[in-house]
Length: 219
Image (cartoon, rainbow, N blue to C red; front, side, top):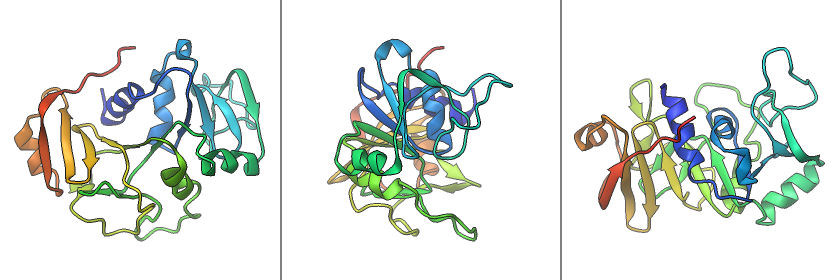
């Protein structure tokens, strides 16, 4: 199992039945693959779709049915297409139960930076700022390091997406919960010990007395 799949499987376990959930571009979009349709979850995309399904089989793609990143998706029964104003009204009005966002950095205070990529021309922040501020629960799904450099840092060097701390950070190595006192390590990946996490994490963190092994949702 590769890093992105393990992250997506773990994040899927945070999703409650009968909720409205936004999935960000890239890795977060994989989460839909590991959520049972029986849960009655509706996935929302800020480009105006409520009821996103998993990526369609090759050859069955519909160019008019994509997520916010332009990736092909399917629609579940009961899905709806809405305009951008309605979509962002849901986000800014606090009607999104949970959002899953990618991250470039998360710091020891739980602040997220995910909309500026150093050295690259980007189209803008998209809905990241609105989602990080307006969703009831914010989960960051990201790989632990980029080219050997930890993405869990003491202080973000990139512009913050929001001053609001996120609620949970999931990487392929660990699950952290930000608190007013700092990050708390809740879970570690199977086969990963505490020393490895400390060596590959630039942020200070405490270890939960209930530290457990990360459980990955089965197929």
